[in-house]
Length: 371
Image (cartoon, rainbow, N blue to C red; front, side, top):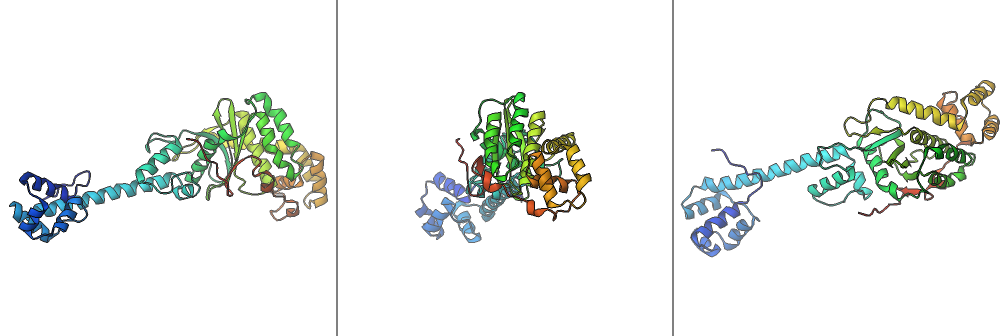
């Protein structure tokens, strides 16, 4: 005989109480008839314990029924429970496929202890979707070191956290296209000294651009992102994944080029950015490099001073361009005209100069959001 399995688990105790009520019996009455203790009967009714073959035979005899009836109730209950557990496991697996749940809980972006249902609600709220069948609709342009045709869960989480905290970043007025060139000119005045990076957030705020520093998530491989909260509110987010001055300035200019051209690509947890992003990134890379060092001047320097590139000559050239020597060394490495281990004495860190000067989360800091 097939066992009916209800959609929701129904403990045998509910059926037992119905039978008792139909006969006007108490637990004591059933105990006296069957020899099952009152505590055992109470536990079955409350769902604290199940029906055993022995109790099934006794209850069935008392009600003039078949023992299989009560064993079927017990089996159906256990199967329904198992089905619920299976659905929970599948749903949890889906949530972990979408986002780095453990890391997000560690960072207090998601509740640390809650039911699967509440976790699902929190994930949907984080991704701004109605349910798990929807795809995220955030549009970004990002600088990262892996495939530009796909966003992994860590990248998706990082993008959305930037979006959620960005409204708290200070800004002076609305952004306009006319702000870009003079603003970048002011920024470049800060590129000669590592400690002047602390003044970058103020210049960006004066341009009408919100600036967020968000520690990268493991396996995200993200350096920065550009996005828009609305038509007048651009955001630049950096991860400081590499605590190097050259990476900071290149990533910053890279994202500002995205802002200049209003580049954006929709984030999708399965498909990712659409066609054309490769061209977008090529544009951002080339314009960022050219903004930091005029290509013709860098090429002239390479012809004159390569392949040896004495440190004193690099420093002199950097000073003539108004930028830090580390930025020049970074450009030379990017062009593969020096090895990664050359000119490393010119390297400067940047994180200690800028963390805390901008809206910062990670590295021990957490931004509490209003709900």
